[in-house]
Length: 191
Image (cartoon, rainbow, N blue to C red):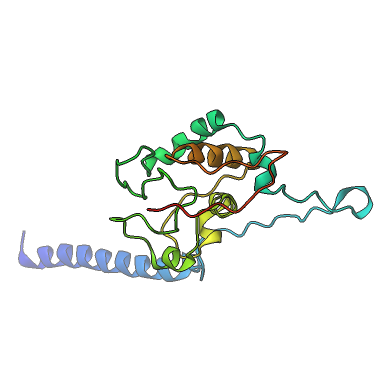
């Protein structure tokens, strides 16, 4: 084979490669979908109208009312999901999250040796029954900027059971409200 034939073959291969490259570049610009400004899908939810001629849905029960009939035994079952990130026994120290032993009545962001987010440090206050209820409902809504990725517990009864169980994890548990014992603010516990 002479050099002229080799040049024709190599020219045909090179020309084909250049043509395919041009088609590939053009197809990316022509056929690719536009990139959305915010990734994901928008889910629209139909707002439900109140039933029975405009009556509003019943408001959520106060946590103190739910605690009056809460079960610490059921709360121990709910607490199993907490053990992924938290220790529940005294002196075990933090995992991904701080130790939960003695959390009821303790100052927020006060476990020594745990690095809390600035948002949780700024929350301040004490972990009362009400504060724990708001936190366990949706931590990121209660304290925007928290590092806790837990979605929360939507079921009021489960939250009350969990709070009742967390209250038992202490040398001096805070008395739970009863029908004859109206709710009182939880006293601050020493660290």
